[in-house]
Structure formats: C-alpha cells, structure tokens
Length: 190
Image (cartoon, rainbow, N blue to C red; front, side, top):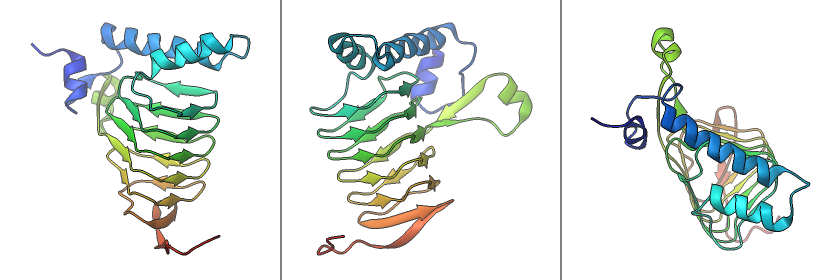
C-alpha cells in the first residue's frame, strides 16, 4: 500500500492534513526555518538550519529571512540566486529555480491544489503540481506563482502579479492574472 508521501510526490490526491509522517516532516522543516529566521541565532546556526531545510540549494544562493517552507526537500535552486525577505514555498511538489534567479520580497510559490468539493477539502485531501523558474528570471515583489507554472528563461514578472499559467522565455509579464506585456529586446539597457 502506498504511503501518503508517495501519493504526494506522484501528484495524486493524498491526506495532507492528518498523515502523521507528513505532519512530522512539515514540523521539522518549520523548526529549521524558525532557527534560520531567528535573529539571535549565530550565523553558523542559521546557515546550518538553512542547509538542512533546503538540501538542494545551489552555490552562492542567498535567502533573506524570514523564509517559510513546507518540506524543503522538494526545493531545488541553481547557483547565484537571491531570495528577498518573506519567501514562502509550499513545496508539496518540486519547486525548481535555475541559475541567476532574483526573487523580490514577499513572494509565494504554491504547489498545493485543494478539492473544490468542500467535503473532500475538509477531509484534508490535496494534490500538487510542480513549479519551474528557469535561468535568469527576475520576479518582482509580492508575486504569487500557482501550481504547475513554468516561468521561461530570461523573463521578468512584474510586482504584485498572480502567475496562473506559463510565462514564455524572454518577456515582461505582469498583472492579475499575469499576462505577457512585451518581449525583452537584447539591447535594452533600462
């Protein structure tokens, strides 16, 4: 019989609220984030907590506290990424960031999907779809990225956007819902 974690990782409906093993994993990651976020901890304690919370973090990647993550093992970052204050990642499915990704303050990456039917939702069921942010992307402050979205290489997502569907490479996109505003020209200097 499959565990709830196995179902979660396959993107199937699973018991998100009441499965003891998943609750324990989320609690462990929450405690690590609390250590990282706590200003009275030493730099060494904070670095170690972040390393344990996000074991697939690329070199020279920086997270500015506070950081909130559900599991941590589903987050993968490339090298030279920067995540400003208040990043939240509900990583029930993989959340993948390429190299040289810049994320503004108070951004959320949410992979969880809850049933529309109240009875199933109240029973604690959910499933998840991964999020991919490709290389050289800049995400402005207060952006929300929803399940299943890919943001293409070199794109810029404007502040306050709610990204509900894929953003192609090399564009400026913004709004709620987020939509492409224009292509980015190679010779742009502003």
